[in-house]
Amino acid sequence: MRYAATPGKRWASGFGHFLVLAAFVVFTAFPFYWMLITTFKSTLDLVNTSSNPFLFNLPPTLDNLRVLFFDTQYIRWVLNTLLVGFIVVVITLLLAVPAGYSLARLSGHWGKQLAIGIFLTYLIPPTILFIPFSRIVGWLGLQDSLWSLILVYPSFTVPFCTWLMMGFFKAVPKDIEEAAMMDGLSRFGAFWKVVVPLSSAGILTIVIFTLTLVMQEFIYALTFITSSSQYTVSVGVPTFLVRGDVYFWGSLMGACLIVSLPIAVLYNFFVDRFVAGFTVGAVK
Image 1 (tube, rainbow, N blue to C red):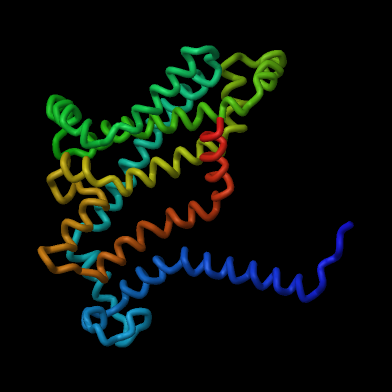
Image 2: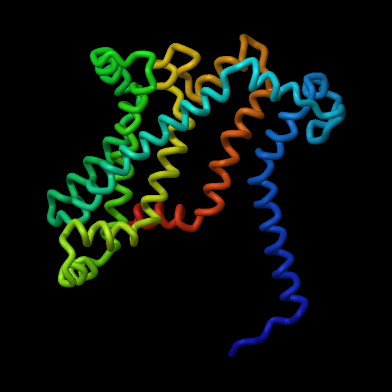
């Protein structure tokens, strides 16, 4: 026998949910608030230990953004990062989507073993692959070029994204493809017009994952690029805004805030598809 909850219990339950949600919002939004307030704080306000670090104790200033945009090549670094990210995303999609579909439809023992082997290559630490990649980059004459990063980054985006898309394609029933081919579509037509749209969440996951990885990768970008004009954000910002034991905290936080906000907005708009992409790919 079920009993209806009293108004007091419903109010307590709703208030408890509100507290949990409020705590989660504060926890997730605090890094952005900290970056925002630090960006516009003056140096004296930042270094004064007696000041309240969560508020403006002195009038806000734009000096930190001036240093970021006029004393460094920050805009150039952002453009370099976007260029590398766009090309790597295209390469990853062109390789991972067909490979994932092929492995999803390849039944039997060898199909499973091949899929596991491709995923295991993603788990190889970058430091192990550093020497062979350096030899390849040198042999191709791509030192100090963004093309070296475009060549290297797909080596760890394609395996993971292939494994991810394989799980998505396995979730699409074969009967749908067969029905589409019976209606006159070819195998490729059924794949392109039926299977790919049904797997849009996985494709979106690949795009977000690849862009995030390109923006945060540091080791290869630091090693293969030596000219400041060819730096990506992950290398240029700490290289020019950390000088010995002097940290330009305001400019650092401003640089991080500018590049992180678009990613956060992208995650927020497509969070349901992004979660579905990882969960379906992982379960399958």
